Length: 589
Image 1 (cartoon, one colour):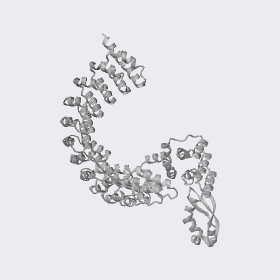
Image 2: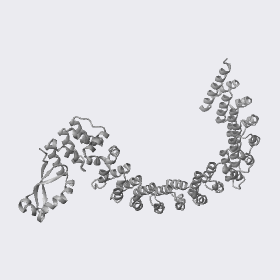
Image 3: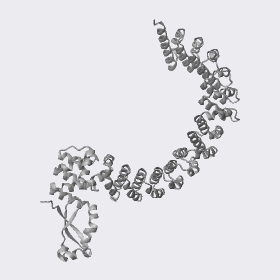
Image 4: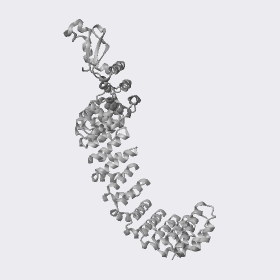
C-alpha cells in the first residue's frame, strides 16, 4: 500500500477575519493536500473553492509554511513518527532554511536508522553541523567522503540539501564539480530570498561552472538587495564572459557599494567590450581607490588609446596601487601611450613623473631616450633613479645619449649617466667616463670610477690610479674598488700606497683590492695594516692575507687573534686556516 503521508491540523483565516481548523496531509516536505476543511461540508465543494480559507491555503500558505518554524518542527515530528516511508521527506527537510528544523530532521533520521539518509547527513557533517554528526553516530555509520556524499545526494534529487550547504566552501567546490546538472538548481537558488549567503554562494558557483544559461539570472542578481550577492554576481558575469551582461555591468559601476563597483569594473575588463571604455574612464574618478584601480586595470585590458590621457592623470593618484595599475595599463596600451608618457615626464607631480618613467622602461621605446636623459636631472631622486634604470633597460640605443649626458650642466644628470653607463657595460663609453674622472663634481667622479670598474677596460687603469689621490675620499675609495676589479698588476704599488690613506674606507677598499689581485708583494704592507686603528681595515687585511696564502703572515695573524673585535678575530682565524690548507696542498706529492 502506498504511503498516504501524515496529517497535521492547523488554523487558517476565513470569512470575517475568523479562523478555523483544517487538516492537511503532507506527503513530502512542503507538499500537501487538504484532508479536511469544514467549509467544504458547510458550503459544498463548489462554493468552498471561493472561500477565504481555500484561497489562503492555495496562495499564501506555501510561503507561510516556509516561515513557520513551529509548524515545520511539528511536521518533522510527524514524519519521524511515520517511520521509514517518511525518510525521503525528512532528507528534503535537511535543505530547510531554518537551522532548528534541520537539526530536528537530522535527529529524526538518526533515530529511524535508514541508510538512505547517510549521504545528506554526511554533507552536513562536512559542513560542520553537529546534529548531522550525532545522527551518523546514532546510525553507527561514518560520514562518507564529501564527493561521494554530494554525488549520492544529487542522485536522490535532494538538491535543496546541497543548495543550503553551499555556504560551506568545500561543499560548494564539490557541487561545482558536478558540472551541468548543478546549473538549474543553482539558478533557482539565486531567487532564494530567505538566505543572502545561499544566493551569494550560488552566484559564485555559477561563475565557476561557466554555463551561459546562468547569465540572465546573474544579470538579475545585480539588482539584489544584498551587496554581497551583487558583488558575487558581477564576478561571476566577468568569468562567464557573455557580452549580454555588459549594459548591466556598466550600470553596476554606479552601485552604492564600492565592492560591487570594483567587481563590475573587473568584469568589464574581462569582457573586453569597447562600449565599456567611457564609463570605465569615468570610474577612474570613483571615491573608492580599489574601484579606481580596477578601472585602470580594465582599461589596460581593453587597450583603447582614448584611455591614455585619463590614465596619465591617474598616475598622480594618492594611492600607490592605483598609480601602479594605471602605469601597467599604459604599458598594455603600448606604443600609442608613449608620447603622452614622455610628456608626463614633465608633470608637476613627482608620482606622475616616476610612474611615467617606469612605464616607459617597460615599453622600451627608444624615442623616449631624450626625455629620459632630461629626467636624470629631476629634482626628485626617485624620478631620477627611475629614469636611469629605464635607460639601462632600453640598452644600446641609449648609450650615445648617456655619453653626451656626461657633459651636461647638471651634476645629477652627469652622475646618473655615469651610473647607467656602468650598468650597460658598453666599451664605447670608456673615454667619456675617463674624462668624467676629472669632473668638477665629486659625485660625478665617484660614479665614473664605479662605472669604469664595472666596464673592466684596461684603458681605465692609469686614470684610476691617478684618482687614488683625488681630493674626495669617496672618489678614492671607488677608484681602489675599481682597480681591484680590473686585475692589472701594475696597480699593486699604488694600492699598497693607498693603505696609508687618511680615509679608513679608502684603506679598507685598498686591502680588499689587494686580496682580489693576489700579488705576494702586497703581503708586508697587509701585515702592517693588521695594526691599523680601524677595525674594518684590520678585518679586510686579514681576509686579504688569507686569500694570498703566504705563511709569513701567520705570526701577525696569530697576534690578531687577540684583537678586541670579534669580526677581526674571526677573519684572522679563517685566514690562518686558509694558509694552512694551501700549505698542506703544496706539500702533498
